[in-house]
Image (cartoon, rainbow, N blue to C red):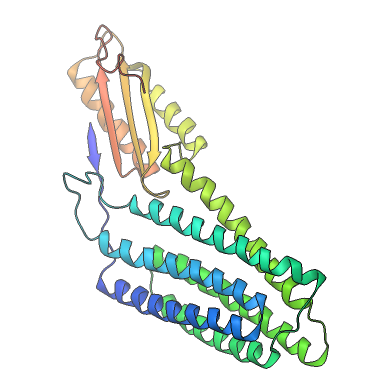
Length: 299
């Protein structure tokens, strides 16, 4: 029993929207790095690192949206969904390195704070709110999963720039330069927390760990609930990209199982397993006295 469910991209309109936001974000990230250097603000540099990660995420999403239109082939028999894991891993590493660099810059400033160029911070924060807010508005028009996830990233950026705006206004009236490194460290720790969580999940998926242990138990229970099934082995659930999961299993049948009962079993399993939304399911039925050909293969 083998089933396929290939999902294709949501079309060229989605790709155009994501591409537009990608180029806007890249250009603004470059402006941020320059602005952070000119204003001597580690908070702006920290947000620039955050936006660099978002640019990579948006670029990956754009590429994947285009790749998802391609059909599976002999080289990539499961399709191209797994490329998103590679993108997530590279993105996580880039953000980790950038965040550690920001911490090395910001922590010494807690002891010897330097006053940033406040007017420049204020202008960049207004610009940042406008650019990220407009990009989020553009993506809010879409309905694809890619667009919804990226829209949340951009809304986070808007809130980050609101924080920079508030700090820059305070610094115009109070000479508290320590606020700048405190804000940058706060941004950076927030980024590192999310990156470490996502990196752990990405690495586990790369190593083909089960994406959901509760789902494994539920599927195991469904398979063994059938009176025709004596036991099961070589039972695997793994994920292509964290969203699209695959299941394979060998079911050992009882002694007296007719062809009619086998057909009925396959029909019942097809209906019950549909609730788990696997993109691929492979179920091999074995007779009670049959020797499994995979038993000699250590997996």
